[in-house]
Image (cartoon, rainbow, N blue to C red; front, side, top):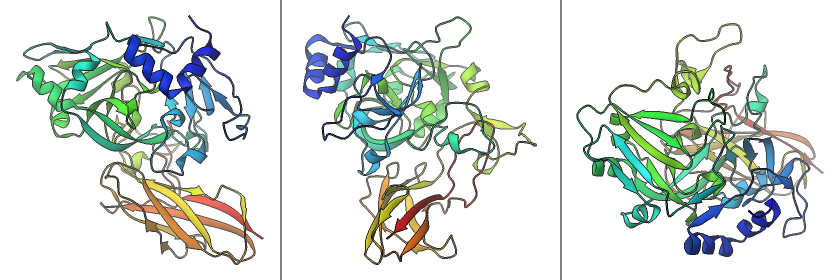
Length: 407
């Protein structure tokens, strides 16, 4: 097996990497780990918090085992997040580091008329669909929860937007033939806990929901094979829902006759059954539901936080907004601590699940400035001015500030 550095170099060469997939049908990551980043091609050095993992540019390290890596903020200045810069979240220590496409199969079984098995080529031979969708970790921005909560201390970079290509999940289930007894569909990937007491990461969705959803089994991301750290060879893509449902390295789809009660459904990734999943530290919710659809969010992407800009000259603010699938109706900017709001100009609409870029022309006066941005979706959901809280640090979507100095 090659060393980490050799594998990292080969995977970072897109042409060589694609050639390996097509000629040997084997994609190797090597031993999971990280190394200090080398300079970026433009000569700039990453921040000390960033490290390079195989197949990736330097990413912000939240955890290294299993890898939880943030997209650096500079990569959110385009509509779609580059594959090599897209964030990486894994739950279990033993993630796949090599996939042999000669033997790998996606299996669909359980309460179906005929068990189905698909090679990667089989899936590619089916009629494809493409959908632009944001993948966001349930705990994105957990680091800013007050009071603090346990869990991976993500800042704001646990998200990415991509064009996903694959086969609609409902088409695959139709090919297998759902029995009348079918109630839920479970999904399992190639990752494992490493010790017997750690349950496999298995999630489930109701059959009725799956039939109506835009879920796909995706084999391509932005027109290229999935990076192995993002779920090669295929992953579940559930547009509009948090990434806990987007099972990576998907290998087993099982249709069951009663609700699935595994750990990752009954114990983990649950939120208070309240608006926006909010509770308080002294009054924790007793009624909970599995986390599901994303709420509405927006961010500044340019200028950088605490940047210096020219006073009395036009400055174009830029950012992104997204939600759980109703689409963004408007984005507004406040330059006076939320007393008044002005509409920003929305950019290209890539679909209701995608980032929606926005721009706003602003001329700052001399001195310190604190700007705010908020988004409203097509259902009228608006970001709150005060942050909600829950004990797991999920679903943060408070109005975001930007501090600037004009001189």
